[in-house]
Image (cartoon, rainbow, N blue to C red; front, side):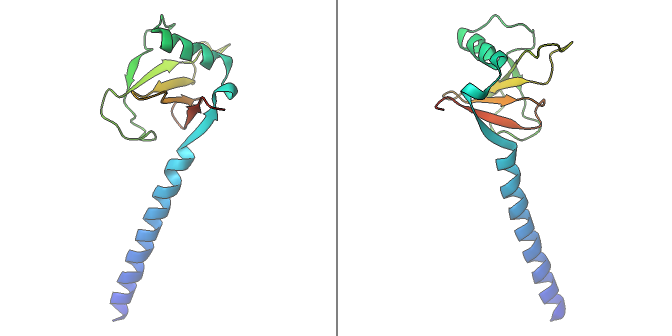
Length: 123
């Protein structure tokens, strides 16, 4: 009987641990940022996206695969990425805008996909 109790306790701990880890991982990975708080270079990138280009880097507009699994799961081709110029950087830098196919679903990352913030245009 003690064995069954131990198994039940272990199963309960695993279930609770799994739920806690899942519930806390996603919200901390995708936050929110006011459009007005974005760097000016992100505003430029968003204007270029709205205009359809031209973009400063050939990789701009490429499909973003979401390999990190941080953004909400969508079908391949749903997300596209664009460079946010980083002044003084010798390369593309780490800043990006990743767009989704729905109504102003724009995500900003300043750390090359380690975390994202959904751009809030209403604040």
